[in-house]
Amino acid sequence: METALSTPHNIQICEVTCDSFRIGWNMTPEDTAKATHFFIDLSRKEGGDPNRFKHRDVPTKLVAKAVPLPMAVRGHWFLSPRTEYCVAVQTAVRQADGEYLVSDWSQVVEFCTGDYAMDHLKQLLGKAKGSAGRLLRFSVFYRNQHPDYFQYVRTECGGLMRPAMKDNSGSHGSPINSKLQGVFLSCNTEFDTGLPPNDSPYGPLRFQIPAGNLLNRNTNLYFADFYCMYTAYHYVVLVLAPAGSEGDNFCHTSLPLLDLSANPFLTYIPSQRQEEESLFCHASDVILEVLYTEPIHLEQGSVVKISGHHQMSQTTANAKKDPSCKVCNISVGR
Image (cartoon, rainbow, N blue to C red; front, side, top):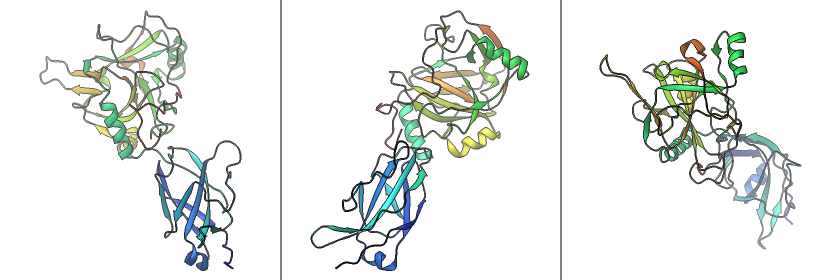
């Protein structure tokens, strides 16, 4: 008669990424010597009892041959970035008749997956490049808002548009979500006029600033995200950070750096002669969302009224990315 297996204890999770982790636990020396398989059950933390495991004598979601611990878990589930999970384990001995002698389930341990790593962001960048389209010239960055916003900036902030925390819109694994502050700006223009569009869901007033005030030799440009919201058009999120700033230091270790003069999204080519103007271009086939990491004073530009129709429509605030889109998703998660 085979002796019972002890319950695994002291569950430890380490080396967590957006789509993998390592798991280890303590067993008696006798169990370590005779265990042939490990059963691992994983579920998202949200909703109901996280320990929704099958009967103790039935192999569960992952059956792995016993290996030295900690063991790597990857590719067995479509793990999502920045998601809380619950995990528990059993040890097992496969017997001659094919049945398993199993331990009791361990305690449930919770952990959270990480952001996209640089390799994942480069995959997303590669997808975004295929959708960028040709480059069009532009001359100003702009921000559309309601009058109350600009009144607040003038009276309460000394004329400074201060950076705000990036929300959770777009790809769930983007490293800037809820971690990087900035002022969101646009630069897309109408194809036929070369000017910013006259309508906006954000409000009838527009702050606009010469492009060279923000995009120049002293700023770095980073790719942060590529997503859609169940629509045919796609968004690319870029970060503009003055070199050496706190925002630049964050982006340097978290995001792919783009060449200012040679990338498919937003370019700056400085003038070669004093009488020439610098050249600024934006991608024509995606909507660019540019996050500038420093405060911007209203006196650096101008606030003008725009004449288009301003009916409120869906904005991108905390908007969820379409997980089924083949254009803007990568295999490691959403």
